[in-house]
Image 1 (cartoon, rainbow, N blue to C red):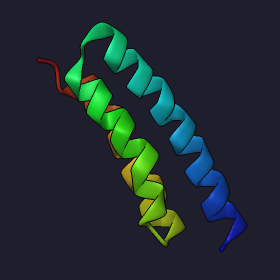
Image 2: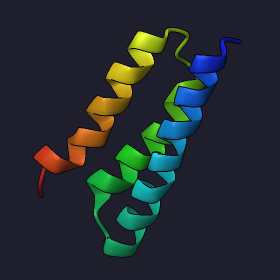
Image 3: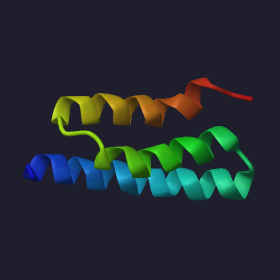
Image 4: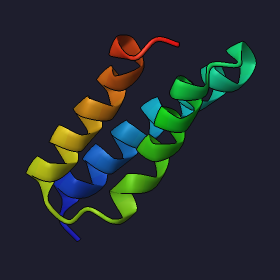
Length: 67
């Protein structure tokens, strides 16, 4: 496994934990599911570029989708 891939995965997963906890406490489903996705998707991505693009997209998702 590539070291940079692993470090990006740890970064996005830790941001995902924050989103998950925030979404659960505030009853914000978008933040909850975005955080869950941020924690899980690094296990399935094998390209650094794809991981960064997906991670940034999932981080920005709750910002632009408000319900």
